[in-house]
Structure formats: C-alpha cells, structure tokens
Length: 248
Ligand SMILES: [Zn+2]
Image (cartoon, rainbow, N blue to C red; front, top):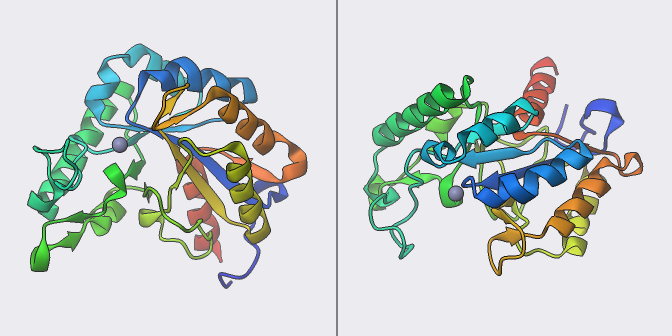
C-alpha cells in the first residue's frame, strides 16, 4: 500500500475526525460533554492529573460514557519563552526527566480512573527538551509509552497510511468560524485524511474557546451519514490505523 491508496475507514467512511480538548477546563464538562452526548460523539480530553481531581466524579462519568482521557504530562511543561511559564521549562529538561514525568502522570491517571491513558498530547504542541546542541526530540519517549501523541497548530492533516502516530497533527478549533472548520473537513474528505481538532474552553470566552453552537454544528455535520465521516476518540482511531497498517 502507498500513501496514495484509499484508507479503509470503518463503514466506508471517507475521512476520520477526533475532537480533543485540553487542560480539563470546567466548561468542557458543563458545556462540551452535553453537546457531544446529544450527538453520540465521543471526545478525547487531555489533562495533567491534578486538574482531574477537582471534578473527579464528573470525569469518571465522562470516561464511563465512552470519552477518552489522555496523558498531558504532569506539570504541563512548555518553553520558557512563554512568560507565564517560569517553573516547568522544557529547555531545562532531559529525556530521562520527561520519561519519568510521563510515567508518573499515567500512574496517577490510572489511580484515579482505573485505566491507564493510551494516548498523549504534547503541552503547547512542543516536542523537545533541552537547548542548543543538547536539544532532543521527546517524540521517541512518547512512541515507547503511548499508542499515539498529538501536537497542536500543525498545518497538515494526518495521512493515515503515512502519519507518525507519535507525532500526529492537531488542528486548532478555538475561535475558528464554523465555515472554516467545515472547509478543513471537506479537504479531509477529499484526501481521505484524519483531522484531530484541538480546543480548550467551550462557551463564549474571548480566547481559547469554541462556542457550544459551533461545536453542535460540527458534531451534527460529522454525524450526518451523507458526509462520510467516522468521528471517534484519538485512541480508537489510532488503534484502527495501527491495525490496518499492521495487516497490509
Ligand atoms: Zn495544555
């Protein structure tokens, strides 16, 4: 098989979509999960474990309803160039530190949820540790520990025969008008790709937010059989991609 061949998505779907939400904002539970539930859509929620504790029973219920809760590291470490980030700075990490941190985050999530997370989202979409000649990619650490790793604000959609499951592209949906999201989906359908949307809050905030109306319309479009979309969690779609590639 080549990257050009049509990928066998379930039920003859022409493209795959995952809706992912980061950092366990309360609005995801209060506004997002009900919208997804109305459409029978299962979403993926990436969060450091301590954020879950604040509303643990609600997150456990979301998991029981079929949503996925994934690893998003322990300390949400990003570059020190973000002015809000003084303490947990990727430039000061080593691969060993990151590996230990991801293991500990998975251990705590498993302790709270009863199941280990199988996928990961890179905080701030950043995949490196260290600086200068000591800078390294931690994608191999993620590849060893998880079925899949998701980035943020990539320009590409994921080609199912080709994509690196440990470095999947995430497409921002915060503050993006519905027409633009649907245009992305049309492109995915045309090219047989997998779109992983990334959002934060659900509501009417000025930034890092998708409105309930946009989310509702997006779910409705993806669930309309005429549009040929398989919409499911990152873990379920990644498992399908891995299984199909293993057989071919
Ligand atoms: Zn995050």
